[in-house]
Image 1 (tube, one colour):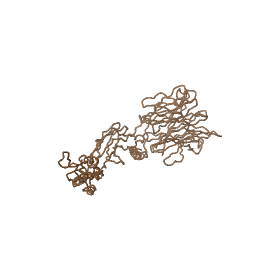
Image 2 (cartoon, one colour):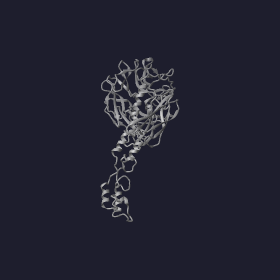
Image 3 (cartoon, one colour):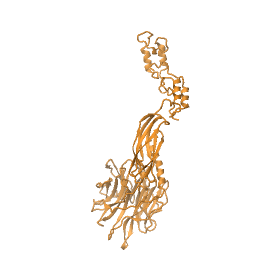
Image 4 (cartoon, helix red, strand yellow):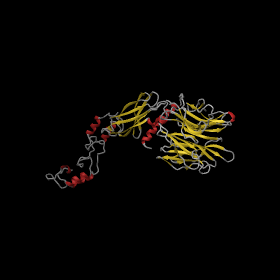
Length: 577
């Protein structure tokens, strides 16, 4: 991992702790109003089982299955924040493809997992999208029965977790939940997650505090209810979420950018004649599942019609701060055609701060100089925020050099500056970072723009700082005193503080000359006997390689450690302390 990445990781870990602390307080959920809803898929065919994700470019991907070609295939639409793009067909086999799931990987590629009977019985397959091209499908599971309804989550540590339903067809039908993980292009072995039997249609999600949630439907009390387990270092016991006597299944959990949990599911609501119709319900939690709201019926049939609504998939969209809920329904018609529909909430106010336009000047300076750091603090959220920004310089380690706080109104920005005084800094190359401490209620998912890099700065040592510790004190005086009297001598003929081939060449050129000769050169006469001879050549040869170039005790660079060097250190004594 690069130093920059390590620094950002350390900062984000600290920030995460702050945000987690904020999340454990109960905060009110914002009341929402839902739009009437629109159909996203073409008329005349069945489209259902939507699955939604948001990529790193804030584009929504909604995958679903369709029977428009005579068999079941996977299709998708994308929303770029402005408009819905045309459909894309993701599978084209003559066999069936159903129950899609999507996730974006750390490298930016997108993974699609679905179930297909191309090998005889329904097994899970996956393909990836990279550089505008989908890979060929690869088989993931080889069950004796049937595998379906995969659910994916990309954990913050980079691991992709997948949970799905396995249906055993030997003897009586039994369903249970399986799982496996994906890391660096390699899938783990699968394992069974549920233990009680009759578990199906799992949903996996990681909340902002790092907890992993796995929800599923199970028959524990004569009908299907929604149950879940959580993992935060260890798995919790099974918790029952719904207690209705009707069948509840097809769970979907998401979290909005205020930390509120939204749990959607399908309920088969009893109707006259002893049958039931599917409707979508949801509950919310403002305290990470410690308590849940009363149930809310999300889909309500038009008067005089029996409508089947199922397979909810929901996400709080970063761009417009609205909840997007997709589901399969025969509301088209009504009752004439199954399609994927969408309803959106009114915008939900959020807390969010960011940094941009970070610069520094100068790029190089001597110790005790000042680096000016400029940046813009932004409040793209919906509340007035007191924004605290920390400045760090980093080489081997990271150190705080300044902290400043300002108040910013929602939707506005503030130009800010801070100074870094380098008087106590060890001379080296540094990277200057800025970090806006998360404000209470700010989602971890929004922290990517809380950090800004101002650039690199080189701090150069002042000559009197002999040991380069950023200050001039008794240690530097002692170091000069210990080398007092050291000099390179007359053998350094050209006075470049080293005895090398140039000095040998000078003696060789003037070899044999004496005072009064036309090419007499006195510095080549090392021993001062008025003739350049073998003795002078030998003296240079003996000292060949001697150098004071990298001797900091020679403060004034006169090729000798003398009283002048002691005096220079004494004059600057106390610098940086």
